[in-house]
Length: 480
Picture 1 (cartoon, one colour):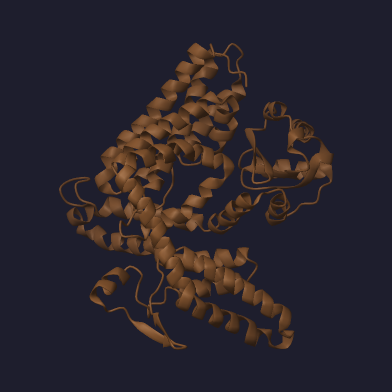
Picture 2: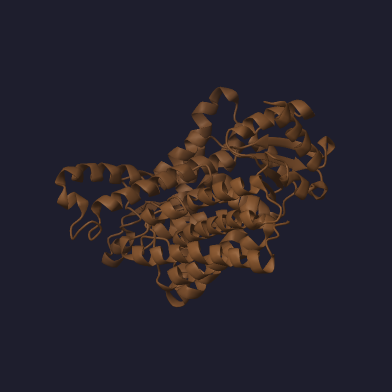
């Protein structure tokens, strides 16, 4: 680490209110994460003028400084050496930040803590499903699909489909692992609990509606109750609530049972009681609740799709700032497992990512017309625009658009218009993949043309609005 960077770290410490304002600190792949005693002591303008800082924002009780991949590790080591703070885990920082949160923020944080760790598996599955679509859909490269035109690729497509669908077919196991870990239980038993809920001996949740119509739903007689023997494939709520109950029972038994017999008692009793509760009460109630939520969202988009798309497209960027966008991931997953077999929220999210990138690209152009040239801004705006188009919006959102405000407003205007178009046409994604431009491979093939038009809207509208506002209203002044 050079002396220049050491000086930059000292400037960061000074800009966030000095060493005495730091409660705790850690870092992730791209950002320094601080829990500060007083966020109001941060000199944001001074902080973001430092050469290695690409942006900063407060979220969920933490003050986060965007540095960049790779460099953030070196910066944190110098920070620790300069301040003498002990290196703490992300979990410690999150716990410290949670003390500053209200109940709604804690709920959002809880959902984020559960779903963010499993997001790579879901995104990977979505991308592979998109690749499978390219191989199997008709009218893409000709009247027939690629696997029909080139039969030697058919087996490859089947293998890709099996790999891709695994994360969705065993979704309760993924959620069970993450949720039980978050609630303080044994995460391995969370996997087992999730697998119990999708056991092949149960009637699949996907076949349940047909079995109800035919009157062929299998049942058990448990404690004098008639209980349906059904699985919860693709469901979110049943395993979430079951994981919470399992963790409570496990922690209770760990306190009460002697160490010599814990292995024989704790996990078996906790799993048995939780599984019975899941099949008898938790599963049916939460399955009905999840179905009602999905049906309600579907009804809104069926009857007022243009309005739903307009609102979601317009507010998604704001939700990212607050962290509330994490609450919609379970809704996406619930919609994918519903009768429509897709989500209309994810396509709008993808357009919102592109819109933020387009606004950042406009700032890059404006930087050349600015009276005061800022080479750092040019580099940040161009690189963050590319990042947003590839689905990672943080650098563009916090480092550029929110910094100057009007690019952010122009971006959400473009996203709202694109969302209106997608909502009015009920555009569906068959999986959750990468946001931004690559998101098109997750879109159902019959909606590709509409989605492409939506992409043009969020590329052109935010760029042109930001450029015009910057040139004719701001007169080329980019002072934040």
